[in-house]
Length: 143
Image (cartoon, helix red, strand yellow):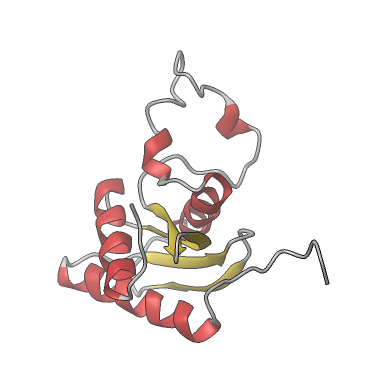
């Protein structure tokens, strides 16, 4: 049928493999994280909270994954611009699910946005290092 858009998103199996890869990155660095994978619409495919990760980390991991696909950008890209006086100040208050700390990245495959992954539980830069490392291990582009 004309005018339909073909979409791709990670399968449950791929999402679980991605979570395992992020967990391996976290374990290698002695971090306990919550990890979430979403499809290109921001809907959760899979999530896990590692033993010892803070209870609040899961909500942040989901928010980071959601924000990454919402804007097709790393969540850390918005940390400075959303501060008072920044170019994007205030927009992150328009949706309670938006998280503007590093640790969420969009997942690209064949040049298309197919989903996002977010993690929380360590320092924001460490969360991001784990999701980037895990995503790259599985062949995703996370530039």
